[in-house]
Image (spheres, helix red, strand yellow):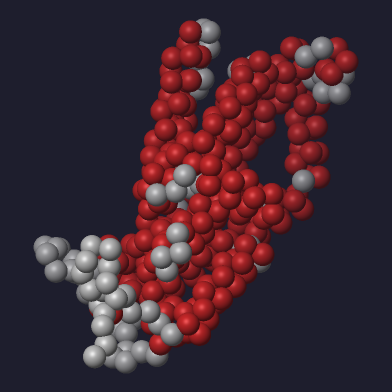
Length: 349
């Protein structure tokens, strides 16, 4: 007769209390493959594509009919909607492209005139030693700006090429994410495929938590910007133009981690410089303070959603930025939340 081990409570422990796990070789192989995928996305600049895969999966999954949900689409139709909608939006832009092009040409001279006037205003308010490096007259300022833009033509071309490549990468990622939902699974799956699917499910849960946290971070940034533009600046008798649009842009762009904030920083600083260099410098200092403080806000909100301490997220964010730059900073909370979820599933932490 074989006796069962006795627990401290006096009850025999049974084998059914131990959850089923894949064989170690299969499980370790899935971890290695996922690690290589995450590393390659950072090394080769494919992080936008990976995030787009997650977004496409969430959108398609959100449109899918489920038990207890009154409205929903089939998996195939939900995936088709996610794939087709970006194409429809692109076609609508193309239909208005001609009018937009003529409008851009008509507004070019006005924009150039406005920028030249801004340069002259800045010149008048700078010390003589610094002002000597800027043009003196309006026509000279316009010629100076045109020469500068021509010298930067190659850089602008490269930027446009990179933007097109990034857009295609994001769209392909959306297609992949939607197809993952829309493709029917085979009745029988091998152990490695099932292990990889489990890694993918855990990754999507972590991504969903990060997205919800990023929403609150964007709301925080927009709130701080609203207080700065609508309360602090009026107290100094300064009115920033397009205040409502700047606040809305801060919230929408803030949904994109780090990169969206950099975009808002540039736009708000230019809006301040259009009034005076002092106002522009004040806006820049405010944005730098908010950007640094966002490290702690990000760690606090994301940490609460992912059951992670703030110091842990701050550490991985600093390490990620030091090694991979902005991509590492954006990916660090997501990858760390996923890693910690897997470690908890293995009961290692």
